[in-house]
Image (cartoon, rainbow, N blue to C red):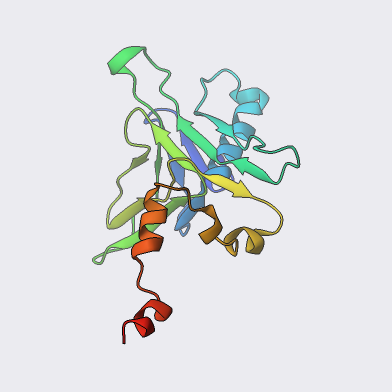
Length: 173
């Protein structure tokens, strides 16, 4: 039995969250939203959860920096190693060449493989170990001077001392 919801089809027999034909990249947030909305439909409340998610917690009082989203594909059919987690499966490409498919926008994890293979596709999960989302003036964050952040005895101080600058090079003459 399967149910179509947005760009995704929930296949209850295989535990695949199938991505619609033509979609080559999906955001972890979109996967999370689709699963939550599908699970909230009265007719679907009898089924176990597809995934759990968390994150986007404020890191500061001004709520301009947040932790990233973590989406975990659930395995609810049996406890222990026999459990089969859900997996995202992209539609097969036409071939004979390999086509790239992407999952991005947060940490996407599972007890097994969070994505299932499909013909003529190479799937990349773009994730970070500890993502941080920054709202507001990102340019000021990236343009901050790091030279003032050198701590005595640190590797950064050692690199700064050993770094051959133009001034040091000209002084060699």
